[in-house]
Image 1 (cartoon, rainbow, N blue to C red):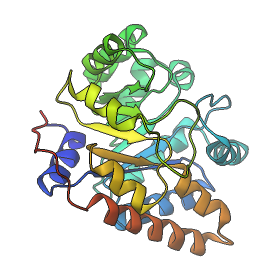
Image 2 (tube, one colour; image 1 turned 60 degrees about the horizontal axis):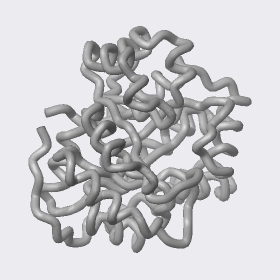
Image 3 (spheres, helix red, strand yellow; image 1 turned 45 degrees about the vertical axis):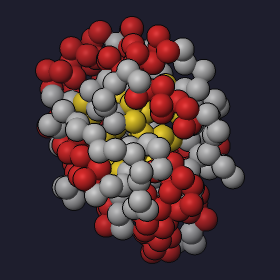
Image 4 (tube, one colour; image 1 turned 90 degrees about the horizontal axis):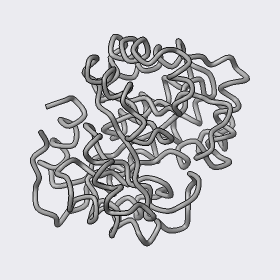
Length: 274
């Protein structure tokens, strides 16, 4: 069992969903970003996604784009991302990288996998890499013992969902709605159905992202998914904070609220993650 599967299994044993938090590396600065991610873990986040800043983030909404722009203008690099991963992984929380495919390809697929594993990373989420074009990544991630996370959306056909699940080794990332990332007043109505469609073809954990920003929404999603992914809401709290100390407090408060939400009773039967 990988460290990532272990986090989902522990959450499941507690009859709750796992809480996954996202922050881009280098935002607001590398040192501040590390402190913020560690505060998230201390307040109840189970798994951390470290975003690799990229200049053309097609899937990201305005909040994440603002954070990524700030990280890039501050000089964030792949080396900084790996340093962030190493520091956050030291908390004991499984730490993944969320990256578009171009930066990984530029570094070199095998080199990136080796460097991430050496930094203590447990896997990579690749939102724009379709499984049928992921042969090099499958080989490199297997060699480095990294988990792969691919995405499905409400528009995905059942055939596509099966192909994504077959290539995934970590958890299946279920995008709750079509469109870019961002906090919303409600989670996409098709998310529950999408999770059910994924579970029809795999025993892997299924985590829902895009739109969750409150404890109530986290509780709702935790009622049918194995994981709840939150990114934009954390970033908005940081953007709104007047200084670093206030940002740390705001992020910890939100993490605690979300952690309480995912800890409300989950009705689904326990699953075993291999």
